[in-house]
Length: 143
Image (cartoon, rainbow, N blue to C red; front, side, top):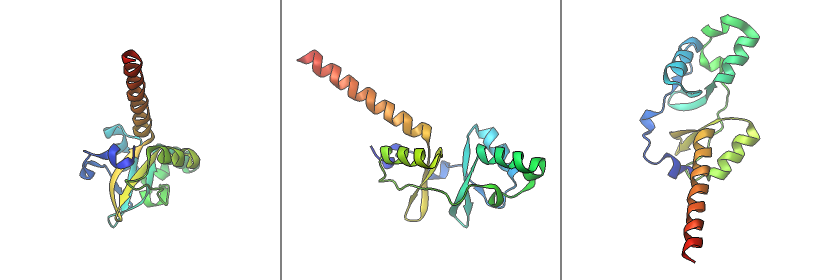
């Protein structure tokens, strides 16, 4: 399975993003309200980085409450590590493991067309294993 199959049916307009100039305090409100762990951070329509819960912890730990007023462009993880729709789920999981990240923007022709989490990829793997196991059970019962 590839990423294109995983994001099929999702509208890219549904991806929650923030601009590089948004203060961290506002982005935190978006994370909390939407109950999500990360946001793609945009600059002039392109992904400039990722703002995640980890970025919040690092900033607060280093600079305290003053960091809440900083723009995302100063506190995000950049550059963003991305994948293309043709990337396999296995490749994306490997990339996340190697780079110790949990979110990937999906880029096609320079534009973000999806945003996936490690949870999306694990679910796809679990579903594939369950389908394979059911097929094996059916085969064994019919033999």
